Length: 317
Image (cartoon, rainbow, N blue to C red; front, top):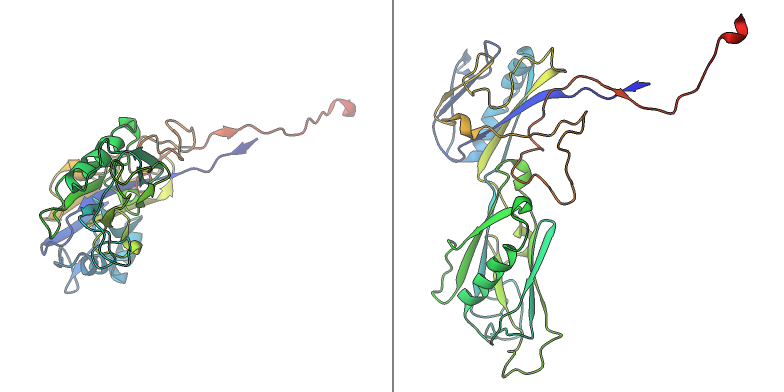
């Protein structure tokens, strides 16, 4: 018989990125930050990366260790990405390239595929069109065919392009934590069904995913800070930082300042790694709204079954 590894408690919170305000954390009665050498709140920066550097100052890491915890901070919270359908398929305007400006034009002969994370959906346009809004709506409706409980993102029509004839979508990760960042988004065309440019179009589509025409930024990106506090002692008995959603101003963890304002900004998970409760499908991300990469439930060891070896002392008698 062997024992499975015992996980320690880990809690995670969303902090406002890019806000120059004060922030303080007290864990187990120890203030983690220093302000001019004195324990207290620190002043965050309008640049979220600089705020993270302040949080993770070596002195603050040391004070966290003294309080029995480990802290991390990453700019991965509330991730999203823009997807814009443009009026032309040309490298000067869109990610797709063409020798010359070619009008976006698709019809029933072109299968358009949209991939978000592990899920790919397809759609076609009934009649030939160059209307970017029509294409964007078709992509949105296609994604809605993914089972609602496993969708990685929500899609809204809020992104704006530099041309009125373009159409923009915002894909927002439903996991507000770090696993919501880095979801790959792509579009591809299959023109094998195009039989007539008169009815099916030329099978051309211009688009931009992310902040630029580069394909290297075609992923969801976070703008807020994911801040985690992990107990350095494993198991439920030694857990000193409380349970998730037990209150951000609890007796063990207390926040001050304007970076976090409500318990709703604490991330959650129902996964129990030892007992495998609500393990779900990792490949299909059965629990997309949970922040399983940031939050961990403390558990105690349980016996794991093993083949073992039978041994008898009867022969000693």
